[in-house]
Length: 184
Image (cartoon, rainbow, N blue to C red; front, top):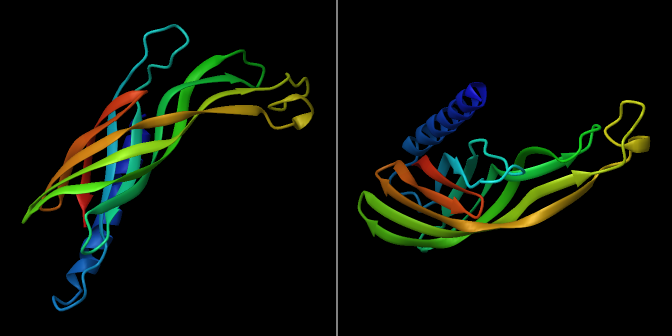
């Protein structure tokens, strides 16, 4: 888990550094461009049963705001919720699910260095994978793909930005996470 956090932080820092240097090269007379926020999130899972995953959830995502518009749109990829895996000769092994989400919202406040955004989050999350056991070492019998079920994932993302630093909260039906990111 520490390697994943280090890798995510390194990628985030590299992207922000390249975006920051690219923005510094733009002349002040240039037309307004898309404003984007790159963020990472981590927090606690909502799990209270024996067949529910309680690994710490995390997400990485991006939100963007078009120039001269209050519309916010974006996407994120998360590891949250419970995924029951019945492949590789397992029987409902409890693992962490993967969610893919879209964000749509609005800029609520734009007062100089201070900005506040809110977005609805809607996507899908892997819930289970099942197939007949293979006796030859494959994931499934006769190397067929498993039957995967998906569930809806919904929630909200609220952020407050001062200058370029963004903090906020990401809450879904599966987890609640603290968000940290950079706006560029």
